[in-house]
Image (cartoon, rainbow, N blue to C red; front, side, top):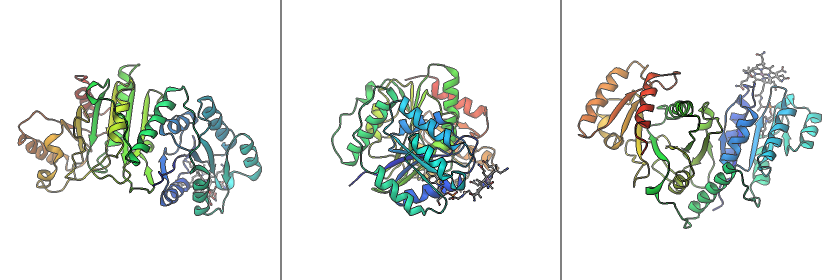
Length: 373
Ligand code: B12
């Protein structure tokens, strides 16, 4: 089966018009395209870094702020500078982009501009026609680019069930921390806050984040974790978004090999985030990670529900996030009691990840960095 086309979409700096791209993203996904969505108000450098790390075929920009001629041209030129000029650039912005502007933009290396009135299907068909065929890509010397393209090879090999050599997990050079938990518990926000602390504590620390979103085999997916990430838009952070491509349990068929590669690529920490998981999920088996963090929301229902969450038996750290919610106090006490059944050392931490400088997140950070295994 042909692997999905991957593209990245974003809205430029000083622009909050995201409703057009949100609609367009959904149409792309419906056409079997994997869309890494970076969100709105994004710098050129953030867009280019993300596109390289995600190894996408093209970048789709939706611009309404009036600065499209220079912004699109800057994206093209920074891609070129970074050796990634095989990543195409296209986009739109309704009536704010005139035909004359579009001519100038194409002259500066933009592939295509879509005007008001173009149907969603037409745009999706364009992407399939122009970015579906794999270009013959040269391996470039820039480290992010090389790593990104190796990750794509591993994803492709996993899709074809081909054998690939995986580095030995016992000799990895990074500490690998696995984050899991139900959808909406705040995993991505929490990870982004931890990344901020990693970057601030040591000016040399480099972090990799491997993030997962669900998809059905051979179909499109919205890989949206980057849109929540603010602090992770940094040259010392390498982030890769993966669709599960039909695999149940929270990870993708290529997770193990991609993780092994990242853990041998000189990062101090590799953080892996599963999709939002159910009660039965045990995503991190066979020493896949060094430490497991289960992130929960205080609103899990009746106390009895806790007996069914198997990750509560095995997690090293249980984070109860959103503890500003009314039910948090009761939840913390119920989860604490549930953990005493396990008769092993497990930590419980209360956080409000959305709050800047949250003391709970500080405590979690200390637990994670206490012993760098
Ligand atoms: C909806 C809207 C808003 C909403 C935005 C909601 C949101 N979350 O997106 C609200 C009301 C919040 C808003 C606010 C503002 N807006 Co406004 N807004 C619009 C409006 C009416 C529609 C834009 C839209 O979403 N169209 C729907 C899309 C699907 O259709 P389209 O634009 O025709 O796009 C086609 C193609 O270009 C293509 N396309 C678009 N993007 C992409 C991307 C890719 C990858 C591809 C392939 C294709 C593609 O898809 C469509 C196909 O038919 C336009 C006016 C207009 N009629 O265009 C003004 C407009 C863009 N806004 C404008 C302004 C000035 C503002 C404000 C600054 C107003 C103010 N003073 O507060 C604020 C700024 C907000 C911010 N933070 O950036 C101006 C911009 C002027 C300029 N740049 O020169 C416009 C043009 C209105 C005007 N005539 O003055 N706005």
